[in-house]
Amino acid sequence: MTAEERRLAILEQLRNTTSPLSASLLAGEYSVSRQIIVGDVALLRAGGASIIATPRGYLLQSAPSKHHAQIACCHDSDDMKKELYALVDEGCTVVDVIVEHPLYGQLTGLLGVSNRHEVDEFIKRCEEADALPLSVLTEGIHLHTIETNDPDNIKRAVMKLERLGFILSK
Image 1 (cartoon, helix red, strand yellow):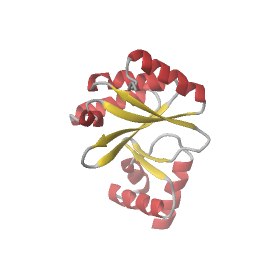
Image 2: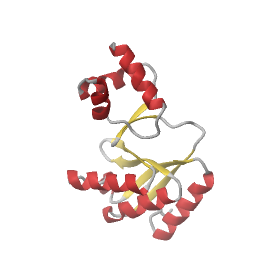
Image 3: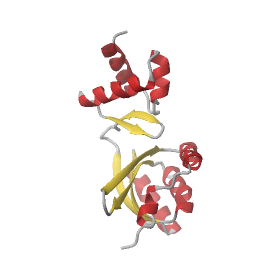
């Protein structure tokens, strides 16, 4: 298999899955190093493929038919799991978290969590890495981009976050 054939095969795999594909998994499938896969993805992106890197692997950017919203939240690190559960339980995917840093401007971390299992895996990786959420840089203030197939899911999710006291008040 040539490098070009491998890149086309990777792109086809990404088109046919809704789950992230890690560079390590792809490297094993194609018997190349993880770094080769990282380079392949970079070349695919340069060629116009809308590939995003999440903490769990690569995905093609979601279809434009989904409904998106950005919500402003504020809570401490201990409530991160409760917040994410509230969003995914209402049928939303939490695409990212965004904070406004005084030196670097907008910082975005891709999350790509859609269910409690994925939230649990994200929280587990945070704990294993002894990593703090981006919102600690802004005293708990952050944005989330959420997406769903049904706009009513967004309304229910926001109402749930309001009840929990996580929506940033005006």
